Length: 589
Image (cartoon, rainbow, N blue to C red; front, side, top):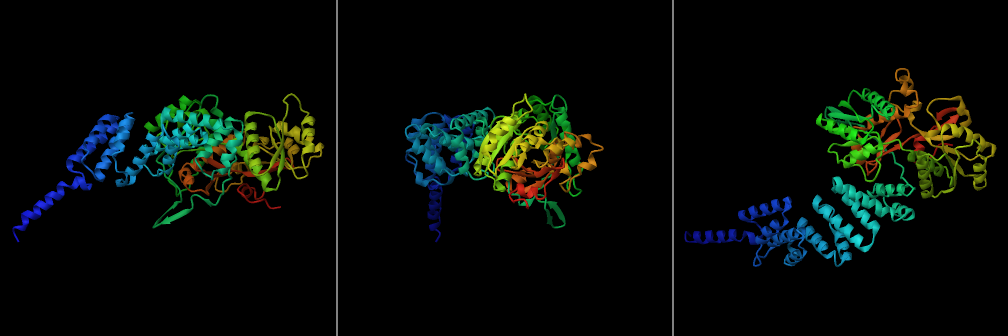
């Protein structure tokens, strides 16, 4: 048997020599491949292409050779030498590739086909898998965007660029966002609303459509949150118990304007935040809290964020001004952010962040939904015309129309008179016996308008924005009896688990005054902090907050479901069952 040993050894050596052909790289090939990857990552695409090309001479066949040739073709393409890329790709045996290599092969085919056949490029881009490395995801989305642009399909290009958004950073991300805005606004309001109706809830295109509609003076209908399960339900694991969804941050940085023109608002939010912070349940760890003054400016917010990061923060809460939020988001923060407003401009919060604000649009959406739930399909609107009022009116119109209602007239009340007879007479013939009235005006204007509506014998239900009530009881509010509006439950001691307003008013004057809603907003910023990331991943879950039930949609926007309040003998009084009505159930009769 001994003479067989040399023969067997020769066979083994021959097999090892053929490993590269069979698909197992030799140590020398592994080293050369690593060198090519390093060159590619440094941006030396020509050097990488030559190295990979040398690894797969023409006489070599098999899966490994095809892989090296594919990477060489890809590097030639990245170097701008499309002819050499196409020539090299033609030598690749595509059927020998799998997984990421197969996707890269198809992607490169699409990129090379784009100049001569954008339709083919579009088809190839559409079939690429979504689970690719980030660099290939970006190239696939860019291919789809360029193919759609060549075909003149603005919406398809915008949708592809929306896929690109989270994969970009800095100036490139801002340029991409501006391009999305131009593409969508060019489509016009009817086309945008039609596209929005076809989107499922949580689709990442919804915020982009919403921003474009706002630019065009309209707004996006909002699906009302379906509140199914509160966050923080006690979960027992062994001997310990914790609130479901709770994330224990080590150090929270609160960024607010404690000086400058927004100081009063910043002070109210700080007081509310601290109240909830020191009311943290005993079974929840309380993070270290540091407060930073943003001075109410974008530059101040960015400086405060940098300092907070240096100080060891692992969560940013704030800033408060819209332009400051926009600047912070545009800076691509490395920490998660719970912004206390919605930013000016375009785009969605960075991944892992969210935006929370007391937006006038929410009042319009809630009022439209309430009328529709009551079976009312026609309405007229009165407004004084301020920016916030106009935003509420646009939201009401969009939501009411999307639900099958019809806004018959929008009357802007003139500022130089207290007599609104002409505006009321203009709408009176339009209202049927089952119509509704929506008002977006100040308390002073409402106290003049409502008596005149009654004199005109209009008996339709009147819904208003929260602006109709100052938050401070007044005998003058008797003129508003019957007017309903959405508001923060904490103002009426209607939210369990929080320090009541009545118990805080003596020691904290802001809780009793006009800053009470901002105080409640500050409490909610504290309550949301440990939960907002979990809420985004768990639709239907919510936190019971001072300003309402708080949930987070798929785009990182905090949705607020308030309670409904009615003036009864001049006193703002919560309606029984109003919270349930806001989230989809009808009020009891």
